[in-house]
Image (tube, rainbow, N blue to C red; front, side, top):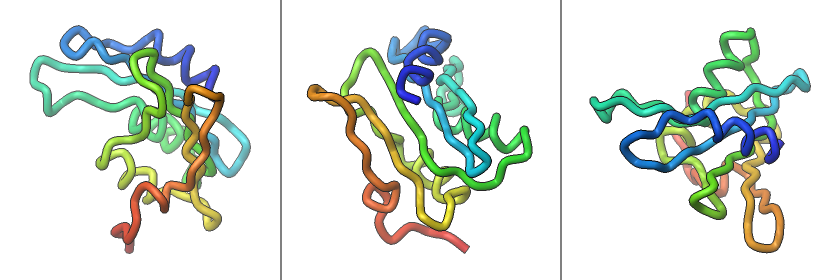
Amino acid sequence: MLQLAEDASKNAYVPYSKFPVGACVLAESGNVYLGCNFENSSFGLTICAERNAVGSAIAAGEKKLKAVAIFSPNMLNCTPCGACRQVLNEFQCPDGIDVITKVDNGVKVVKLSQLLPESFSL
């Protein structure tokens, strides 16, 4: 999944921040969906890689996600922003979502619940 996220990061549109990010989500079905961040001169319209990947999964009919891998060539342990954490929370499987990132000594996996304690959900 990290390799797919790395590949997706190469398609990022980041003329302002120069901070490309790629994401790969694994749905409960076993299918994977990719996303990359894309910016806009109206910064509030910028879309993160994770939300882009989640949107692709939802558009394909998925409703439950098991994992997300996130990669940026500019940062190790690139974890989701707060908005992406909340969006991922909405679609997690009963066992939660594994968040997978690249670190110096390999790969780090944490549960989304560790990154978003006491999350808001219905």
